[in-house]
Image (cartoon, rainbow, N blue to C red; front, side, top):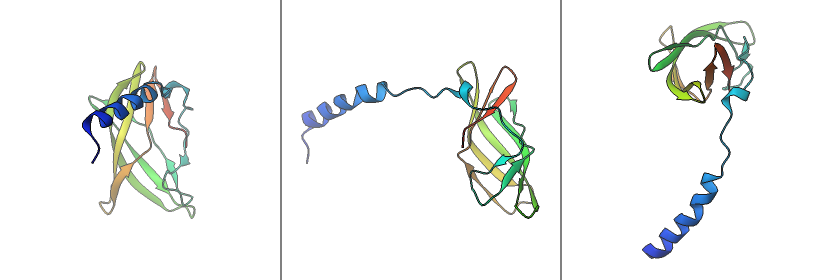
Length: 121
């Protein structure tokens, strides 16, 4: 079992490295395209994704479009977090509008000065 003093010293050594990590520049993300590839892959495209800020959330209805053209209506709600002079839409939870599927998404959106930017894939 490690001694507390040795553990504390190791933690202190790790702190400067964490403090030096570069901050992600959300304003450098590309403007959100329509459609764009799903983070889930499989050739699915996401269409009609237009996040709107309302209080503490960002949300939008959208369609997941399969390569064969089949469309699946969905909605997503994100936490709206102030960041870099804009709003970062993060920790998204989506659900099918037909009620047969739901989940989370790692995709994030940044809104500043009326421009909606999508996390690079």
